[in-house]
Image (cartoon, rainbow, N blue to C red):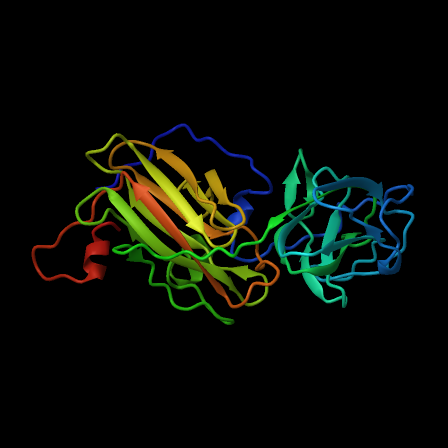
Amino acid sequence: MRHMLVFVLMICMVGAVSAAELGNQIPPKSDTHVLQNPAYDREGGENIGSAVPIPGLPFNDTGATCDNIDDYDEVCPYTGSTSPDVVYSLTLTDPYAVTVDLCGSLYDTKTFIYDSSQNLVACNDDYYYDDVCGYYTSALFDVVMNPGTYYIVIDGYYGDCGDYVLAVTGVPYEPCVLECPAGADHEGEPELMDGYQDAFNGGCNSTDLGTPFQDLCGQSNEPYLEFCGISGWYDDGFRDTDWFTVLLWEDGAGYIDCNIDAEQGTYLFELFPQNCASVAVAQLVQVVGGCAPVSMQVFGAPGDLVWLWVGPDDFYPPAGFVGHEYDYILSIDGLQPCIIATEGATWSDIKGLYR
C-alpha cells in the first residue's frame, strides 16, 4: 500500500536548479532580456595575441567587455552571438581540473576555453540563474586540462556585454573510476548512444514512451539498497535522467538516508509534488568533480512514497569526456524491503506490486 507523502516542503534554491532543470534537453532562450551596457575599460586582452596571462591558481579579476570587439564565438548551444569578448591565457605544467566561474557578472555571459591550437576545449553559456550569481551567468567546472597553454575567452550571448567577475581555480587532476560493490543491484538500462529514446526510467521526461519509473526496494529482506547506475549524454544537448520511486520502510522511523557517488558531476533530487504536470525539486545534493560522495535525508512517514531523480548536472559532457556513459553508485537506508517470493515469479511481477 502506498500512502500520500506528507511533509513540510522545503524548496532548495541552489545554483541554477529549478523545476525546468528536471528536463533531459537544454531549454530554449530568447534575446528579449538582453540589454546593451555602456562601455568600460577592459581588463582581459583583446584577442589571443594580447591575452592577459594568469600567473597562477587561484586567480581572480574583474573587468568589462563593451569597449572590445567581437573576435571569437562558439555555439554552446546558442548561435549568432555578436558580443565583444576578452581573453586570458593559462599555462599548465601538470594535468589540472580547472574551474572558470563568472558568478557575480552583470550581463548575459558566455565563456569558453581554447587550447594552444585554438581547438575548443569547453564552453558554457548559462549556468547560474539566481539573485546571487546573476541570471544567464556562465561557469565551467572541473575542465580537465593536460600540460600546455590555454585561452579563456569571456564573451556574451546575442550581443550583450558589460561588467564581469572572473574566478579561475584548479586542482591536480586524478580520474574518478568507481567499482560497483559486490552484491549491488544494477540499473539495467540499455546502452546510451546517439538516437537513444529513454523508455527505461525516463519518468516525466518520457511521457510519450509511457512515463517509465524504476522502483527501488531494500535488498535481501533488509531496508538497505546498494544500486549501481549509469547516466550520461546522447545526441546534442540531451542527458539521461533516471527517475525512481521508493517506499519508506513501514517498520522504520519515517525517513531514508541517501548517499550518492559518481564519476562525473551529478544531481540527486527529491521531487514533489508527484505529478508530472507540476513536479519540482524539493531538495537536492550535487556530486561535484567526480568521486566526491554526498548525502541527503528524505523525511515523511512510514510507508510513504518518494520520487527520486539522478542525472548529470549539465546538458553536455565535460571537456575531454569520451563516450556517452559514466557510472554512479546510489545507496539508500530505510527502504521498504523487497518482497521475497515464495512461488515462482518474474522481477516484473515483483515490481508490479509497487505500482
